[in-house]
Picture 1 (cartoon, rainbow, N blue to C red):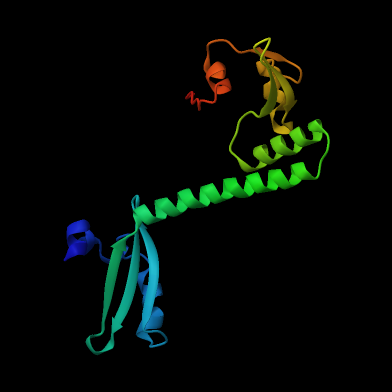
Picture 2 (picture 1 turned 90 degrees about the horizontal axis):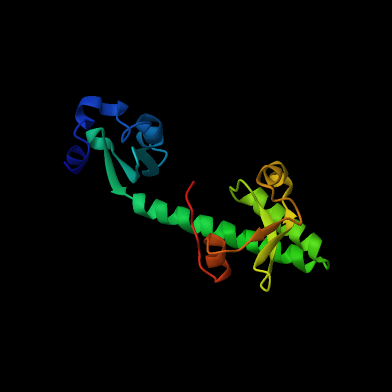
Length: 178
């Protein structure tokens, strides 16, 4: 009933439909009596469904209860990404605590960011407020070739005018798409 409204092609596709794909394998333990209930998650297009499968032996039928858990899965992904960032921050903080000189701190920070985040270029700059300049203090190992192309090798000066950098220096988050 509800499944037929959600998936008009369910009847015609039968067990080939993504909502029922793999059902025989999932239900095998139900039919031979090893378990009374089975649970699984299935993807149908961009949606995720939690299914609970019950065998009705006297009718030789299988009953499938399903709930759309797409929003929950998206929220779980966001939480997992945030936990990964917090773990990275914790790792960086611990590594910084083990070092005394600024260059080794820069090195561990940029290496951790390059290894754990999807970045194309990573560097650390120091800001000279009087001169309105950023000076590249450290370039990540994975960013060396791009640093040469961009003329942003270590000790390079970057002027901070009325551009995205000046807004960053005032504490604003700036996003500039490709």
